[in-house]
Image (cartoon, rainbow, N blue to C red; front, side):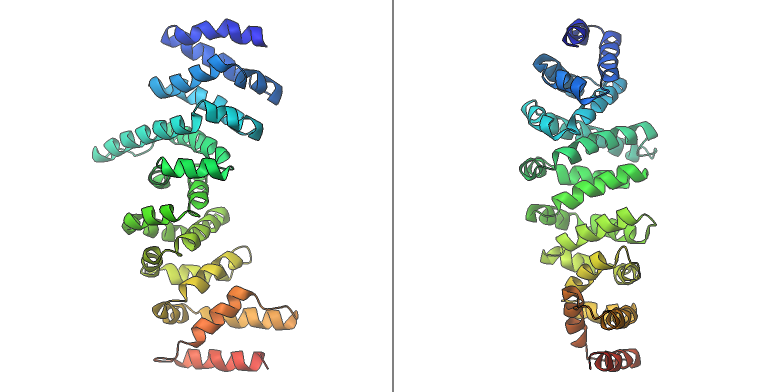
Length: 322
């Protein structure tokens, strides 16, 4: 194996066609962990990969190298070696450059992302997602500009590309600096996220709700989320889905801390869900969910301009809790 790599190595410094052929040959060897171990332990080869990925503009070669690095990044034991070769930082710079090209195409009124480019982004973001399992590495990536890069990728059409973008944004949203970053560009980021609450893909909606929940701990983001016209309806719709209701319930509870949101949730028929949830808890003799209890307390404070629906709701609650 080592001899095969040594024979290929000189071609990485040859002509463009020789470079592409050599990289493709190495990629074809990435069949199992043992082969990958030989590759990552070859210091010169890893350095050449990192250099070629950043310095060479050949699309095919970048695509092949990124696939090799993705295979390596799937093995947690190899993450330290990737960090030593600054692979994460290199991937961030490469994606940032590609996003600038996308912006140029948008100015020319062309299709923002080509199919091949979306696939390339998917591979690069998947590498970052694998490396982000380490919270120290994740924080470093956030400080190096991960959030605006991921936000720029939210306009991709491919479901798998969108999902890995949301995964990275969800992981990053635990940091206060991410919420601050989103708040500064919230006029277009948060509306985009809210619109995703109505897509059919459960995994997308789940990540979006988690992102919005984490962001809502910053007052500016909480206000931006609350000001979205359809957010209350979308969240109530998600409350009625078994796969989504626990995540959605936590966000609804958090939003209900604002007085204006309580009335809006009533108008979106949150009372129907609350009555159903209480009946289920009483029938199954379950301890009440803390988020559900908190939401009930918050909405019970909504007595100004009380409607007939709200009166019905409160009377039902009193009967159920006897």
